[in-house]
Image (tube, rainbow, N blue to C red; front, top):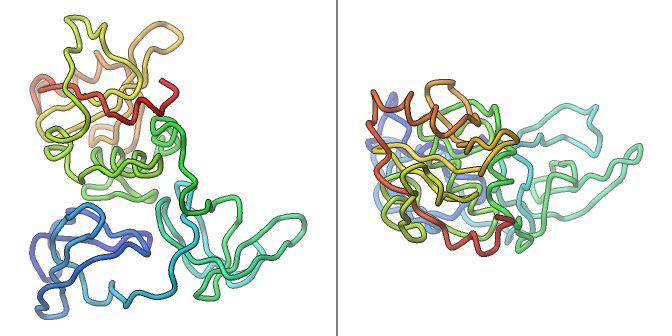
Length: 261
């Protein structure tokens, strides 16, 4: 799976709250009818996940997936049957490599192969989390999703910032209380800069800065278009107002000191 689900209650048919990326470490506490109560080590998120989603820690990862999504193959050839898929941020262990018709592939510890251009060594970080987030444009919206196959507003913020080396919490209310520092956006949003995070109650978007026409643009995963989209900030504020009222604040991530802002 691209990401294994975390839910608030055990059992089938429960609402998805977050996803565990492949290779992500969790602590397990309680088992109940095929489900395990876990806490993710990286961000402390808790909930229930199917016992079949978990495995003992194996060989230490060497790389992570740096493309929004990628296929796994049974051998080093894109014409061979697919044997799986991985999301950006998934951890993998590379054990070999091969080249087929000029394309490099990496062999993984489970015997599958992936396109080498979709992997980066652990520690190789993106310079700009906004550029990472833009790679998810048109990715389907998924409540509780934080993978390249489906993602929600706070999942987009978390995953794109993670790829730039900044770990943040999972949900938008947590992010609104902890990421960076609050700023005054100005009466006409004149103080906003690229990478600032605009928060509503239950929603968050990433300021992209002005477009060619000078309009401030907002990048966000949203239920109105059911995907990751870029739209004028003023338009987003007007459209969202009937559901979440006006924005409740803007925060400037410390990550901006490393971004091409």
